[in-house]
Length: 133
Image 1 (tube, one colour):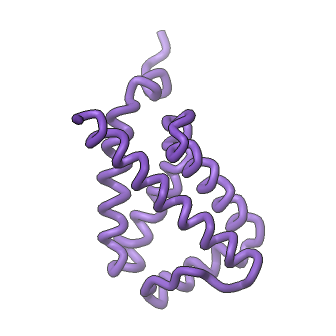
Image 2: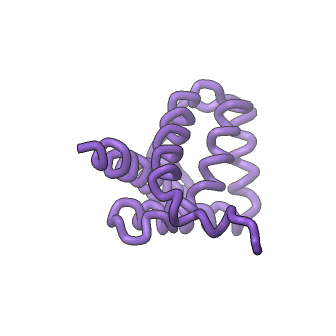
């Protein structure tokens, strides 16, 4: 039961959040409109518009989100999925803390689920943070 609470549930929740985000992002790429319209501040909307205006960055980010989400949801290489999604999670958390405070509950969910998974998969990341001898 402990494994389910500390690994499976956070893995599925995080995977679903990023899968929905990727689907919404691809909908924007192909139709020019989002499927999900959360409340966003003016500065938050400007930041998102800037990311989309770059051209290559928005599709790249959505592809990485999709791959990371599928790794988590299928439980195939979930540590890789978490590693792919971690930089995006940092940007999302900072985005909500600085530019769009109405999204802080989403940021908290990302921090909690990502933190639980990082702790559970810490053995997979040990070599990345160990010192070279």
